[in-house]
Amino acid sequence: MKTKLIMPAAMAFIVAALPSQAGFIQYSDPTVFYNDVGSGLSVENFESVSSGTVIANGAMLNGITYGLNDSSIDFVINNTVDTSSGENALATSIGPFLDLLDVITFEFDYITNAFGISFSLSDTPLAGELFLSIEGHNFGIEAANPVSTLADGSLAYFIGVISDDTLFNKVTVGTFDDGDTNFDFVMDDLAVNAISVPEPTPATLFGFCLFALFGRKATRFLSISRIKEK
Figure 1 (cartoon, rainbow, N blue to C red):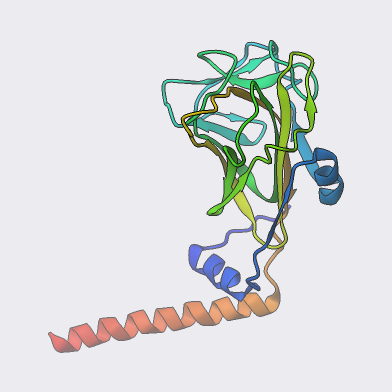
Figure 2: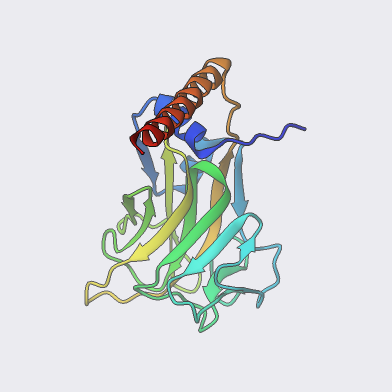
């Protein structure tokens, strides 16, 4: 087993050495998203958790920390609303649905380059009325492209995002209130592609050593200069 400790300065040096050409691809079809991500994808569908189970606001389940902007509300696994797969979905402690203006965060204990999530909505949203935020980029729901209409009349939607070179460990689900459409929703099938961080190459480590050595000498020089000034 190898244990890797990377200091913040070293991480900054490594990131600076990487190419910067961030690009995201958005998906409204889960099948296409799953195929494009490939075998590394893991999906949390909440079927291994009993209905009624409470996930406290800020608590972790299977490597994902769940957060909501209202600290008085927790998450609850619910099976009373139709979903795109299985019986269970992610709801809240105040009812089976999340509401407009709720802000939900998913934070992973690993990094990823792909995230997808399914929604069951009680009504048709406006374009972008429900969206994901990743690294400062928003990806709105494609209102005209539901995946399906479920047995209870609710609409199944999907938002998936793959980045070609931007890694992240946090996703926010947000909404905006247009004063007209008012829908409720639950969430299901959180799909995440965990990425392994490669060990630094010898050239990168050598560069960091030079960086650290220079910083040490600069600190020593400043200390000597201050002593002389006194």
